[in-house]
Image (tube, rainbow, N blue to C red):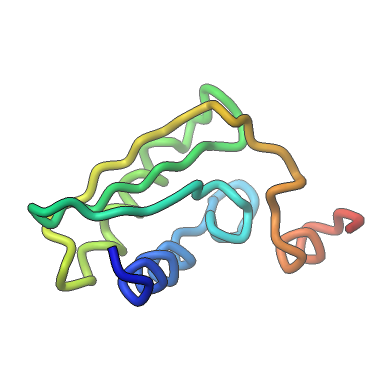
Length: 103
């Protein structure tokens, strides 16, 4: 996958807001990677802040919705993983400031 497409996909994912925290999933550090296969299936590998997150389905639908605006992406697959586990260390400086977490 070329860098421009990866940046485009990550930029689109910045529009997916975690409803509980009010910060996008990229700045929260929830997105571990994006890829696209030869058939145009966008693949997002990500985690959630906690297992059993009641909003997992909502976030997954938002991921699919924002990536459908990218012409190269024909459909989207979301892989939720738990390893490595998410921690506050994965958050961007912006997210930490917005949530009042010391850097």
